[in-house]
Length: 74
Image (cartoon, rainbow, N blue to C red; front, side, top):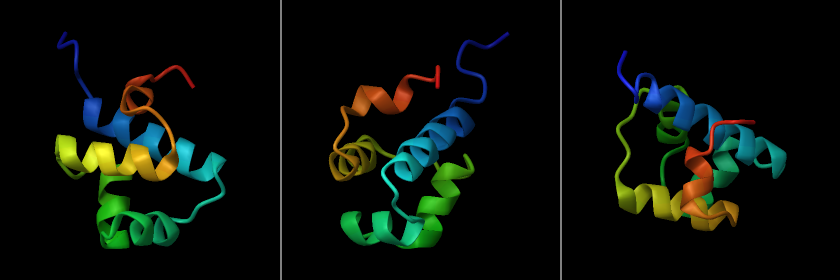
C-alpha cells in the first residue's frame, strides 16, 4: 500500500482541526491569508493540491509550524 495514501485528505482534516481549535471560520482564515474561503474548503476536503507557499501561509496564519499540519495523530 502506498505510504502517502490519502495525504490530501489527512492534511485537510488536520488543517480544519487546527483552524477550529483556534475558533476560526473558513472565512476568517481565508481573510488572514488573502484567499477565497471556497479554496480553504477545498483544501480541508482534500480536493486541492496546495503549494509549499500556501502551506507556509496557512501555518503562519494559524501560528503553528508547517510540520504540525503533517502530524496526523490528533
